[in-house]
Length: 113
Length: 110
Image (cartoon, rainbow over all chains, first blue to last red; front, top):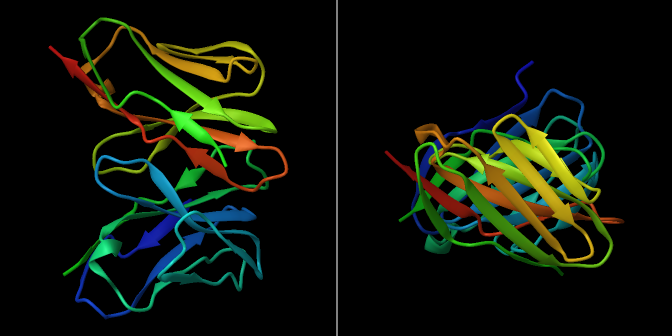
């Protein structure tokens, strides 16, 4: 049972490049989330999904896109990378409600230079 | 929206006790979580409170007062490995997401 798996762990992008952060979970969880965490700060919600085919914006969605074609996968897309997107990105999942604890991936450290 | 406040930093000595407070302003409260996050790692679950009172788990305890919009995380018999950031997160009924506080960095000194 791998839990929540994020790839890559580290990435450096040039301004204007695009990339996809991968997230997959093998726990059959319905709810999945993408957070970003800037140094010394808490978690800010980018996008979330309550099931396959359903996504919604969080607090800081600008510059990002997501899709949820399967229960397992929830990729995060950066189309035109900007220095403001330098951050640590965490994917998380929970079975079916916010009464249950979040399971986090190990994170992706992204630098945009 | 929600307003979640917790202190930025706390320092304590090994073996001591530290209490991290979290206050929140929200409607439709549906539970409060505490997560621990070591530097460079993902957050890990510590506790969940949905009813008033104290929940104890070994050296860690969490308290909730819904009427006051207040929770605290109590860390007893501090160890060096307890140096970490502690995140308070609040859930709402009829919502699909948690809101996180900015986190409290606890430094344990020898």
